Image 1 (cartoon, rainbow, N blue to C red):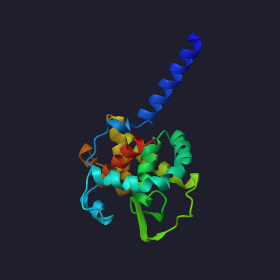
Image 2 (cartoon, helix red, strand yellow; image 1 turned 90 degrees about the vertical axis):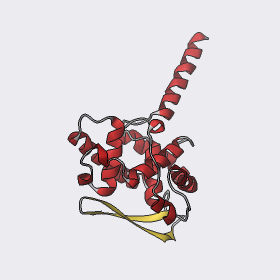
Image 3 (spheres, rainbow, N blue to C red; image 1 turned 180 degrees about the vertical axis):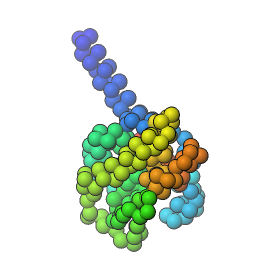
Image 4 (cartoon, rainbow, N blue to C red; image 1 turned 120 degrees about the vertical axis):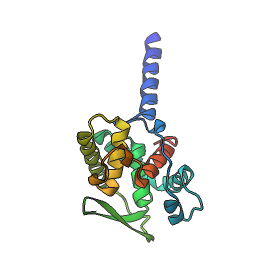
Length: 197
C-alpha cells in the first residue's frame, strides 16, 4: 500500500512541475510583463491596454486554440517550449488559427500579414505549420544565447520573441527585451498557462 501512495505522490509531483515550469526558457508563471500596447488593444477594438488587454485577447482566442492543444504539446516537447508560449504566439499572430496568416521573411525578421476580415473557421493549422513557427522562434532564441551567454533562460525567451518579430539585429542588449510582441505574447501565455495549457 505504501508503494502505491509513493507512486501517486511521484505522479502528482511530475504533473505539478510540468504545469508550472514546462520548457527550457524559464517559468512562464514568474515572468513579469506589461502586456499589450495600447495600439494592439485599439486594433482589436479594446479601450484598454496592458495585461488586461492581452488576457482579453487570449480569452477570445481560447476556443480556437483548444483544438490545437495536442499539437502544441507535441511541438512543445519537440522544441522544449512551453505550450502556453506556443499558444501565446498563435494567439498573437493568427487569433488562435481563426485568421489565415501569410508569413514571409522580410529583411532580417519575420513579418506577418493578417487580413482581419477573412475568417476561415474550417481551416486547420497542421503540426508542421506550428513546428515551423516554433522552429523559427527556437532558432532566434539560440542566436540570442550565442550572442549573450551570460543571460538567464527567461531573457533568452524574451530575446527570442523580440528577434522573432523584429529580427535578430533588434536585440543588442538587455534593454531591447521589452518589445511589444514579447510583452503581449508573454501576457497571453501566462493567461493560457493559468487555463490549462
